Amino acid sequence: MEYQEAIRLLGDMKGRFNDGFSYSDRSIIEDLYQQVLNRIFVKTGCGDCYRDAYIQILSTLKRTKEMPTYKSLYILKAGALLRKAGSNKFYSNPLPSDDVAEEHLAENPSLIRLFASYPVDWEARVQARKNGSNLPETISAEVVSGYVKQLEEKDSVIANLLKENKEQSDSITTLRTNAEEMEKAISLLEAKVQEQQVPLSEENDSAIANLQMELDVCRADLKSANEEIEALRAANEALKANKTSRSTKKV
Image (cartoon, rainbow, N blue to C red):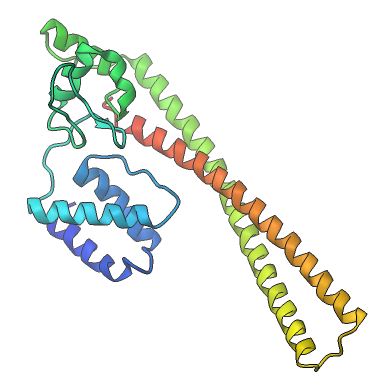
């Protein structure tokens, strides 16, 4: 995406900053987050993460006046820092070059745990750097085949999770509607009793109690459904992040 196009799209979103970004807005923000900041966007389940990302992207573009021309193949996890022992120099996203990541990994390969995304052949690249030889240009067909198979498996799992997520969303919508209707019915009946439009009797007391019980059950179902959909959403996002991490590796 070109700089002017990114600024235009962000300008169009400005009016929805407080009320909530649309699905299309969020998709653009996720793409720009990685393109501009060279970071993997992590959803937190609320609108604030998109507002924060929007501000970071916009402020970065206004400061640099251009789209980034270089992207490191290595992306650190959120909050992760690179620092060599005894040095007071820290590196965070976006890394200035692949050299920075590979120099740290050459000294301590276990630091790969700090990265959300890295080339699939990172070990060969680091070893080549340590040996002072040229970086590898090709990857074996076996590695590529295994990588593709993993992506296909992730796609299948994500598709199933999205289906379950949709079903749970529909169920929650129905439960919310039922809960709202019961709350209105209870409020109306209680108001009539208070205004003596309906006599206070065992029958009306019983009706209110029954409605209240149904409402409590509905609320319990709604809470349970919300918890289930949040668990599904978390699993879905974890798989997406894993897939994104793998798909951004060089093959």
